[in-house]
Image (cartoon, rainbow, N blue to C red; front, side, top):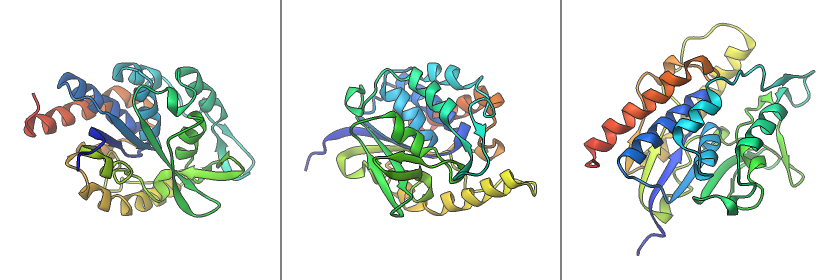
Length: 254
């Protein structure tokens, strides 16, 4: 049976390492590979939304290379999370031209976790910004996002690599995973312990989806960068670009 889409792209979570996605999308453009549908979770939801909205990969890089994590969040007396993402939500809302999924140039699916019901949820219609923020809201660190009277958190909690959300609809699926299997070194601080905990959870739920990819792009040494290391945005982008270019050329694209 003929599939609805020829090429689909799945973008994993991974914090600022998600700029690897932008670099990989740049490589795809240079090789004339045009995704007909995109799925994303967490950082992949942010990059995917902007790309589906018509932003060039280099524009996505510029939008986040000078963004400070501390300036985009506000610490709270614990109220469902240590930080809220209101400032970041406003910033992203200004970047996005589309306000709904239906206005995007490329069909897009976002995975978030329904925190009330304990299940993955796929968003592909209606309001765009809220699901992007929900998918990026790491539990405990960030306050859950309310959508239609239910709370949602980071989609990576249950599915950090959303290949399965588009697999059945695509002839070819290119997966870009920027969530490393190797855990980085850490210090015994609250933030480091929390991020290391989430790393192990995210790592455990990507293996099945990796096997569903026709082409898998996983930048080496991505573990050298932490989730919020924006000062190394250019390096991360370049890593995604060079890795994708190499892999795709090896697969016969030129």
